[in-house]
Image (cartoon, rainbow, N blue to C red; front, side, top):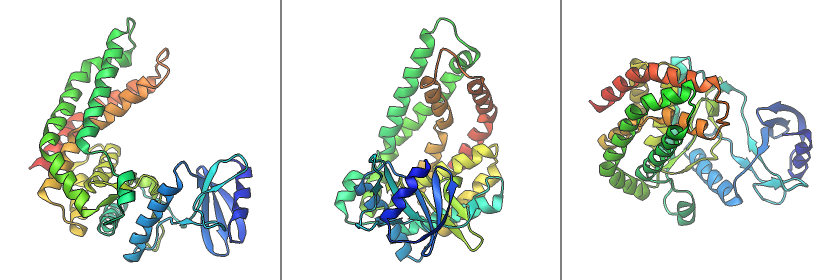
Length: 327
């Protein structure tokens, strides 16, 4: 984002005292409080849905979310002279959740559970038609097809690099997990997803340490751009997986995260089974395969090999944790 984007602030009823650069954004001190100016890739309809979700959260007593501020015309999205889209949102003084701090990780999990209790929207069929997640079974089937495509590509290569040879060596082991996850979802997926639709549960969609601000006086949750109707256990799965990958699949930390969440929002036996199936799926391997497939394959970065070797080192610990979830 360049300095010309600051002209967009003239479209708002607010007095800007100062600005400073953030990550792909401008943080603005205004007479109405802290605001952030950032690019926006969604539609006005999506922005309305985001604000609808955040307004429900605030109505439940949770104030610190980055609600989109309307401009002078009442629109949530503003455009510059080149038709680039921007939004201005409420913002908060704080720092990102520390993934090395167990206390902050557990606080973030409790924060997610509290949000989930408030993120229920009944009615609003127009939003539901536009912003409902793909059922997990369909998602996994598509991902498994992608894995097969990458394997077929690597097999056809005549001269293979170290990463490609290792990829083929361990592919069968990871794909067996992927296929097992698909088989299990064929039994559980339909019923749980139907219940989610009836209950109107909404997920954040991208709940990670970058979007959790430790504010001293509490926690702020930001970046609801990916929010959608979905099984809320999906948010917990994504957050737990990323944190556990960074902490070498520490089983004690993993179980404490699950306990902290369920103390705030109890989960059903069916949700726990779905959590274990999602954990079983080799998501990191799939992402690495996709990054490789979309990269310059004439010269494969050594980083791909290092990441795959690290993934293999963690594999036994990850599998042991999945077994703990299944007990």
